[in-house]
Length: 414
Image (tube, rainbow, N blue to C red; front, side, top):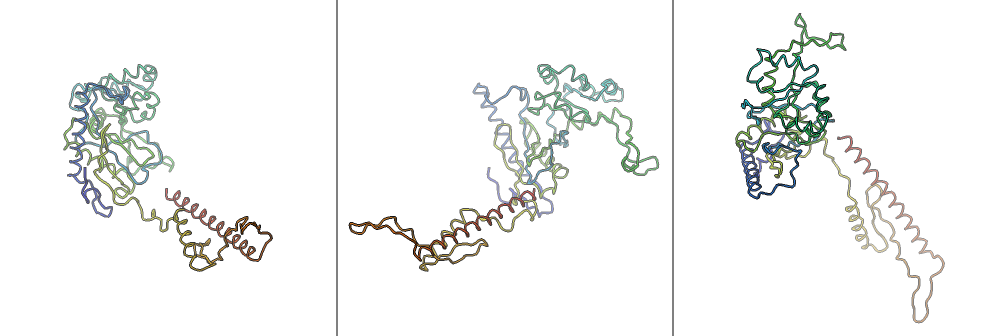
C-alpha cells in the first residue's frame, strides 16, 4: 500500500504530531480484509495450517490485531513484569456478555475477597461473571501439573489478578498462559487507596524522611467492581528492554472504524505515558495480524532522537582509504621517481619512488648474469621501503585509534 509523502511521516518539529486518521483507517480496512480473506481460504482448503500450535490459542479465539510501536531508543532498561493498561474506546473483549467467565486470582487469604464479591453493594452484573476466586497458595497446590493448568486455561475467558502477586504468576502458571498472551492474567487493584495527606491536610512524608507508614483506606466493593470494569475495557502494554512494543488493539471481527479509534487511543496514551521524549523518540507505527505483513501508518523522517547523536565526521572506510592510496600512487607516476602517499596525519607526503625489483637472472644472448652486491641505488631503494613501512604502520595505528574513539562514542550515546 503506497503512502503519500506527508502522510507517512510527521515532522518532530510540528506542534501537535499525531497519526493521520485517513491513513490509519485505510490500513485498518486493508488489514482486516486480508485477515478475513486468508481465513476463508484456509477454511475452503480444508487443510490445517502446519504453523499453528495447539498451545498458542484456542481454536475459538478471535484473530488478534497487533499494534507495533518502534522507538529510536529503549523505553526502559529492564523487563517490566507488571503490564500497564490503556483504556480502549471499543474493547475487544465481549464485556456485555453475561456469560463471560472470569477467574479472580488474589493474595492470601481468598476468603476475604470472596466475601467482597458476595457483598450486597457489589454490582450484580459483575459478580455474576466472576465464577471463581482463588489465592496464590491454592493455585500452587491444585494446579502444579501441566494438564491441570491446561484445564484451568480452558475453563475461563478472562483471568484477573491482584497486582501485588502478578509478578509471581509467570513461574506458577508457566507457558500455558504466557506463551501466546491471549489469556495472560490482567492486573487489578484489590487494595484501598493510599492516604496522601494527614488529618491536618498536609502532604504525608515518606518513612525515610521521618514520616509514618503508608495508610490505606478500607477496600470498598464498588471500587473493586469499577476497577474490574475498567480493566475489561483496556489493552495490556508489556514493556521490555527493546525498541519494539506490541499491543493487542482489536480482533478481526471488529469494524475498521473501531480498530482505527483503538489504534489512535493506544498510540496517544503510550507516547504520553511511556515513551521518553514522546514523539521525538518515536520511529514507526505499524499494524499487523498473526500471519500478515506489517502495514505502516506512521514513519519518522529523522532516525535520530537528538542532534548530538549525529557524528560530525565519520570514520573513513578501509575501501575508501585503499582507493585514495591507489589514486595517489597513480598521480605520482607523473613525476618520475617521486610518488605521493597519505601520512599518519591524513596529509599527502612525497617520497622517492622505490625501484622495481630486479629479476634474479637475465638472459643476454647465451649467458646469464646474476646481480651481486649492494650498489648505491639499492641502498636508496631499501631506505625508501623502510620509510614506506613506517608510514604504513603509522597509518594503521591512526586508523585503529579512530575506530576505538568511534566505538567509545557509540557506547556513550546509548
